[in-house]
Amino acid sequence: MRRRESWRSPEVKSFWKLIYNFFLLPAVYVVVRLLALFNKKVRKGLLGRRETLPILRDFFRDSSPDRLVYWFHSASHGEFEQIGPVLAGLKEIEPDCQCVVSFFSPSGYENVEDPHIDCKIYLPLDFYWNVRRALKIVRPHKLIFAEYDLWPNLVWAAERMGIQTTLFSARIQKKSAKVWPVLRSLYRQVYSSLAAIYTVSERDHQSLRKLLTKNNRPFVRVLGNPRYDRVKELAEKSPYDRPKFISSRPFRFIAGSVWPEDDEIILERTIEMMNKWEDLSVYWVPHEPTEKYVARTKKTFEDSNVDAVVLSRYKNGNFQTERSVIIDRVGILSELYWQARIAYIGGGFSPGVHNVMEPAIARLPIIFGPKYHNSDAAEALVGNGGGFCVTNADEFESAMEKLLTDKEFLIETSLAATDVIHQNLGSSTRVVRGIIRD
Image: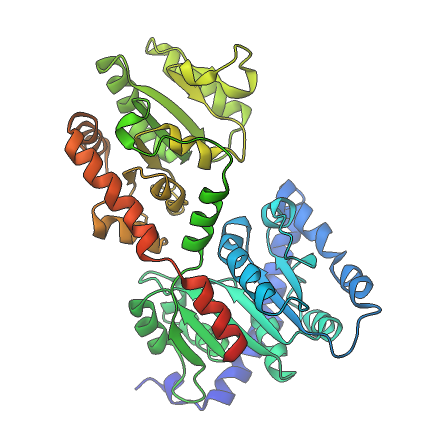
């Protein structure tokens, strides 16, 4: 047994508190301040955090000392998709409770609007004195984290103040930094300081058990991923009339949330297939629709004699009649999936595959790159036959041709994709029960 494993847990925790507060956190803060000089998003987040404590003081100024408050934290907009149905369920059972929701990223803070949020803030900077001050103002009944964005001092301060902390939708990936030899010890102390952890799957449950300390383990259960409920809920609320059957939709392929790394694999082959099948149309949806990216992609289509229009510049009425449309408008992707037969979801050749649940609920077979293990839904799609991992352009073309030419296979994989959503519903109800009872 290694020496560090033989230390008593309090000694290890004290060691990491020292390292984190005097070395790691100051170093991160300096780097972030430097990045803020050049990165608008980072600068916006730092400036927004200046308002966190004033917002909290103003909101709780006249509140009753007996109030019931839940503080939820989400890294960004995507992670909030798991919190949304939990908030709704919590408010249904405890309608008088107040829900504070904090965000790490401006993309979450600026874009999330939910009637169940009573107070929205940027997550305070993780200096111990800072987070303790925020916790004293809010005095939450429980502090609840979604998926992964745990901040050591926030967790440790809540633990010391007797505030119960819960993490839901927890996942431990095989290549996660949490299992690296040195960082494993730090994450062990943070995760072991939580009161309750709800994992997505049994495999995550077992991986988490290995990470936690032997003594004073938090309460750990498998409760699934509430994002499945959120996706189904939003799909059912849509006011649009959608074609239910895959075979009744336009002969169209949609590439959603694509990165330049995805383009290197699929763009040229997509254009070749459009030239091969003259009735095949395409929606091309970049993850970051910058002017430079849009211009470059449009030129690539047109250099191969395929007309391409940019949605924001389209003035001729119904853009659905065009063969290729570059979508440079944010917020409509989930609806566009219902106008296609096959989807490719980007990120699998860069940071990790993006949201595959929205095309799955839209009944699309889904293709993506090899970095998909960040998504439990993508793993489930592969296992159920509704998703296809490709590692190069030839594999992409082969998967596309099979789906484009074999109607029975297309229908079979379409049903397999949407089955993944329906098989995983109900998690938000289980999480709400856990938050209230555990």
